[in-house]
Image (cartoon, one colour):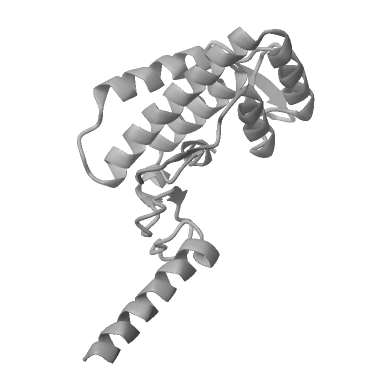
Amino acid sequence: MCLDFVNTLDDRFTDHPKELLNDYVDLARFAEDTGTLSDQQVDRLMTRSMQDPEEAERALESAIRLREAISNIIYAVVRKRPLPAASLNLLNSNVQDAFQHLALMPVKRQFVWTFEMRLDDFFAPLWKIARDAAELLASERLEFVHACALNTCEWLFLDESKNHRRRWCDMTKCGNRAKVKRFYSRNKKAATS
């Protein structure tokens, strides 16, 4: 989920990035689409965002700061560059906030982590995103996170293919575009030779 969250800034490395989180409703919809929050929580938050737009805007700004911190960290890892300390500090701060709302809940003969939260807390989506980012960064799965090989995309994705050699975030979109581009480039070179 945290990779999808980073990808809410589309065309990140172009001259014209596209922000997909333009208001709190967009953040709430992201939380709904990714299963971060229940439908009931999302409905309450959307209603409350109309009643308290300043607090909703504050939460959205925090979400965007968190997204950029996660982005900076993961792209640094993927590109084997030094970790940005300020981004790591911001993520850690969000993780600490998240853990204040975590509790163990018995399920059958085991326990699971669950978030204890008010239904109308604007910052609730951030807790699950921060926790997901921390779990990814602390896991062996991190080595299978890649940036899309299409230079106009560069979305982050988790490569769960058998050989872990996937190059594109989505084979039907970016993979196909890259192959078509290569095909035209080869044919153009052959025609000029």
